[in-house]
Image (cartoon, rainbow, N blue to C red; front, side, top):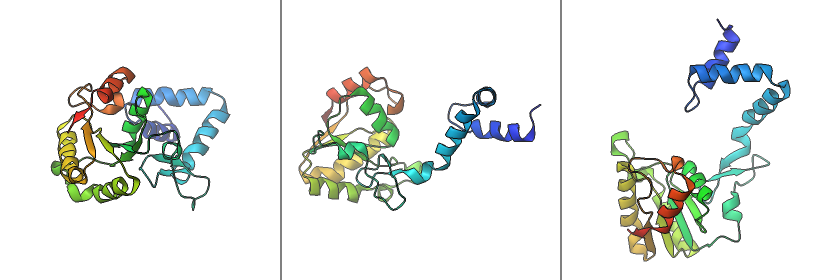
Length: 203
């Protein structure tokens, strides 16, 4: 018996991943009983999310910007302590977060944005392979770690990367199968992710 306004907010909250109608209603009741400043602060941050957070121009990770015209460069790309010769290729930003949580990666990243998936109409031309090749050549990368998930699409993408990057003469490795088959890197725990990176093999 919610009012139209409350029903609308519940419907919007229920669109979040893993949030059903009952959970959405609990979130709504929490905001209604919490300090009004909390809802206002969250709404303000979400309202400017797409203006203040954009993909990094170097790797595709998320980066904060102060002004709309500012070039977005993420903290990982700006970190001078990273090994500039190691590049880890992942499918999504979620995967960067998962690998960073393990604390085992000392290089930098390249986010593909998607996986090769013929069934969904995603072919090789849809992936930023040319940009990846240019970066490898321009930055003197010596090792490329392929950290796509161990799924059908992830394996197909890894084989495509092997075909395109192999002729460049860099060391091409694949994370070990410490991650369950068919699973997403996003849900892997820190120990599993650390072992997967430590046990990477030649592709």
